[in-house]
Amino acid sequence: MSSSLLRSSALRSALRATAPATCTRAGLAGATFVRGKATLPDLPYDYGALEPNISGRIMELHHKKHHQTYVTSLNNFSEQMAEAKHKDDVKSQIALQPMINFHGGGHINHSLFWENLAPTSSGGGEPPTGALASAINDSYGSLESLKEKFNAALAGIQGSGWAWLVQDTQTGSISIKTYANQDPVVGQFRPILGIDAWEHAYYLDYENRKAEYFKAVWNVVNWKAAEARLK
Amino acid sequence: MELHHSKHHQTYITNLNAALKKQAEAVHASDITTQVSLQQAIRFNAGGHINHSLFWQNLAPTSSSDAKLSAAPNLVKHIKTTWGDEDKFREAFKAALLGIQGSGWGWLVKTETGTEQRLSIVTTKDQDPPVGGEVPILGVDMWEHAYYLQYLNGKPAYVDNIWNVINWKTAEERYLGARADAFKVLKASI
Ligand SMILES: [Fe+2]
Ligand SMILES: [Fe+2]
Ligand SMILES: [Fe+2]
Image 1: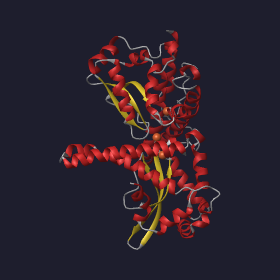
Image 2 (image 1 turned 90 degrees about the horizontal axis):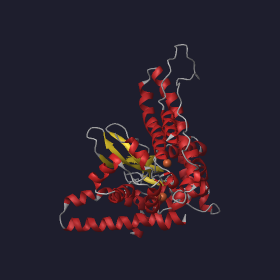
Image 3 (image 1 turned 180 degrees about the horizontal axis):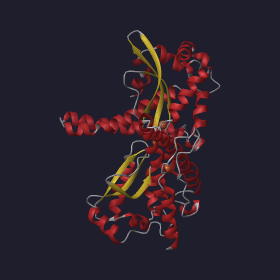
Image 4 (image 1 turned 120 degrees about the vertical axis):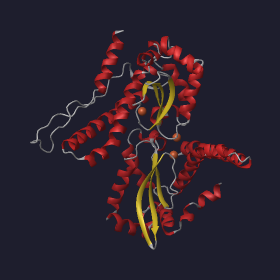
């Protein structure tokens, strides 16, 4: 209980928007234009806790290096964006948008991903219950059938990207969608469960045998976290 | 290299052949919907085949004389007039490669406008191949599978070290040749 509360508050603070600071006209070059900075959230489990499905080596690199790079770059580009806004420099703001989308997306996606995984000793792989279980049965017939379709979606990604179980904010219904690169789930859809299909997510363990990774990852899916995201 | 060639490249070829077979059937059956739905799979897998075929040819062992810049006198001259010097060219290429968001490729290409020949650095996403009319001179695979086992997240080191194994002889030949010449290897292997 308390640990899950900690987890979501850690996520919230990690995802805290980087609000532009009100800066005075006297602001000089080198001044900080961004107040809140994105931070790397702690993992809610040890690096080795998802073995043998995902190795500790992958988890450590993935969290400490890859995710950290997204956080660092997001803060860097947010700072530039705030500066461009301050200067009413629309061209720079437009040029910076893809960088915010990519690095901000990388930060959001990974933050959600860590939370929707769990060691088997803490409920990883235990099937969903409640409203999410009903929604899955209604839409896919069974959890097995959802996993099959989800894995087909993952396998069909051409390049780097993510597959998500999403909820349509208009109709409330759930579906599987894939997103290229670090495009985040925003707008009409709400992220419920995401799986990273970038090669860095599995290559050290599974090499080119990505189907084996897609199969194994279900053993450490935290359906409780997914359920909590459903509205 | 072994995984990259015998598994990844092979998978593109296997999937391309499967898609081409389905397409031939769809053409035979005048089934236009199926033909259109196969296009993305053909583009992706054919692109993977084309890109990797070009890539293997434009690499060479460091010890080989082909891996020396002196193997590409005409190309190097043109690089110098375009970017100032080799280091500036390498910096520009590195920036382009590291700027790729997700999987993709970086290319040095030659374009011809009238009698003028220009060099430029372009990137293509995923397995999009350089088939827009330009002559591909050098390609660098920026998919994570190309470097992850060796460099992990150290992508800049992969990019720095790729220069030690560039086949400048192949690059020179592609530079001097026509567009069709660069793709010769492909005709032979299909
Ligand atoms: Fe990732
Ligand atoms: Fe791959
Ligand atoms: Fe490759």
